[in-house]
Length: 187
Image (cartoon, rainbow, N blue to C red; front, side, top):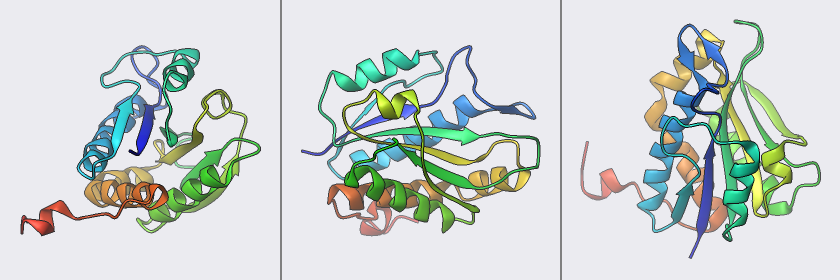
């Protein structure tokens, strides 16, 4: 049975990046939970480190992941720099990534670029949640929260992003994507 651990960045008093009243912690929680729901429809177990707007330390996030055995650990984030100065998506692996991590990062990155985000590439970083987790891990920055165009793509293509990320993840765990809505002729 395939098992995934989803980590939605920040939360509680740590909102992450902010822009015009928008919070990174809310964006990634809402999007990530929708992806988890879609993936579960395919018989994959998805454990979520947080399911509400609460603060969880980095060490508690890695401890949560390390208590079980997962095929992948995926951390969802939104990027920020200077308002309207940077844009695009990037997906991170640890400094010496496994082939599994690198494959998932490439699949996620390609799926988001296909949505209209600028491709900032797959990169390596020494982030705590990549370094201190046992499973093959990636951290994805889904556009810049302080870029109007990225927010427009994030909002207007939300359903397509959920589907694209679901497909990208399922491909990497060897599960065939089924469009449940089309299966039952839902519109």
